[in-house]
Image (tube, rainbow, N blue to C red):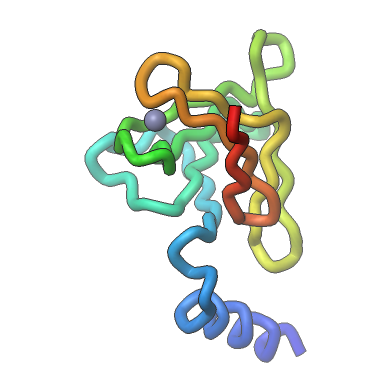
Length: 116
Ligand SMILES: [Zn+2]
């Protein structure tokens, strides 16, 4: 069953209509090379048992990397949940003030744009 589910998930990712606007998640132990970030991938950076940051390419078109804190002692900070299909949900929304002004939610791997 698990193997079938994994196969279906992979197939949906490759052939599904939503592929281009669907994020997946990768967990790493050190900050990735900024040049190596791929589109549609949220990289969670952990240190030991703690998840500290997440980094991903801004989906609003500016191409800059967004680094968000997951540390609840920091303000602001975000929470990430990953469902059984590997789809990330971020809370709260992300606003890229410094550059493109993009404002969006990521829910179940999909981008929901805030038009404000
Ligand atoms: Zn941006």
